Image (cartoon, rainbow, N blue to C red; front, side, top):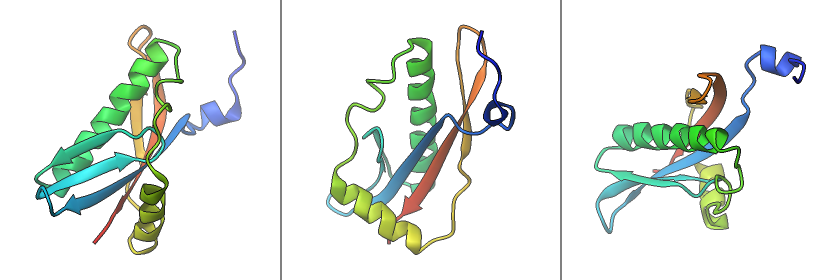
Length: 121
């Protein structure tokens, strides 16, 4: 058994994700893209797409933890252009509420997941 570190005791995030939300005028939907995983969610409303991408990322982390496999979680990061848009959008807004929890289903242990949201426009 591994010893508990001070980071674990302080509930430091094991996973940190950054998400860009932007409006796609061609399809009239909001699109949320995770920079690290490449995961995408779409919805007609910005708040709904934010909730959807948060839930998606927590589900993906839970799945990765349950199967002891992080390779698939990080296999398809967003394109570089999305990273640059995120950086610019973050400069123009207040920080979001980042913490979420992912639960390992086999032992119900919660792992902290930080999700930072930036919006364009």
